[in-house]
Length: 287
Image (cartoon, rainbow, N blue to C red; front, side, top):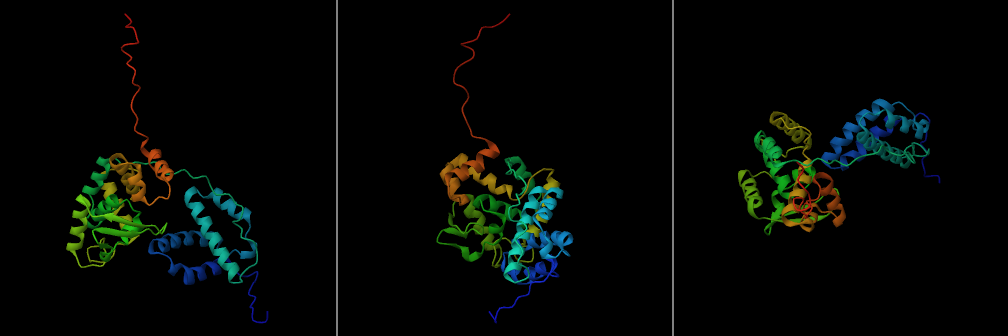
């Protein structure tokens, strides 16, 4: 035990643990995750920064969740607190129990928005070229924003676009066919950049810059409640309408058919036939 250093102190604050996490751990995450965590960390440090780790309790976490108006965002921030606290325990900053343990998060409702063709086209018509390319690539591939932005030239080979999803680790091969093939061919020919989606200088388009450009185009088009991530749900729904649920499941990279079915039906509803019996033959006309 003589080689083990015990650094626990009542003076170690959340700020200290957060600073080390930002320095040592955050750089190992994806660019999108770094952006999201940095934004979340700024808010958390403003609230919990000077609080000693040993003084943080489940009650504090519950108070934070209840006070935060953005309930879904609060759940993500709670998860980050928990992560930082676990690292702090590993680093010997505290031996206190994780204050997030056993604290129930806010109730979340899945997003139900389906983007109509007219809405998609309206935003597309107001988009700059990099955003237009990103929107079309997201629609044809059905992938998440982060996976779309990371697509490289060398991911295109053997008649397909090869993707490994960040979230699931699933590998997909999307065949180069029809309008999708034309899009990819154009993107490959338009620049020698490593990435298919890039800005006017040929550099990879960042997630934050994509969000900024999309917001401008959406507002200019007068379309409300449309997020870039909604394109994935539209892709799944439209694919199901044309090629069936199995094809949509494969494109999304979902493990089960039920996941895809739930993902689609909650947004647009299942297409069904009307009651077959004729009212005209069963009802009497009233004078």
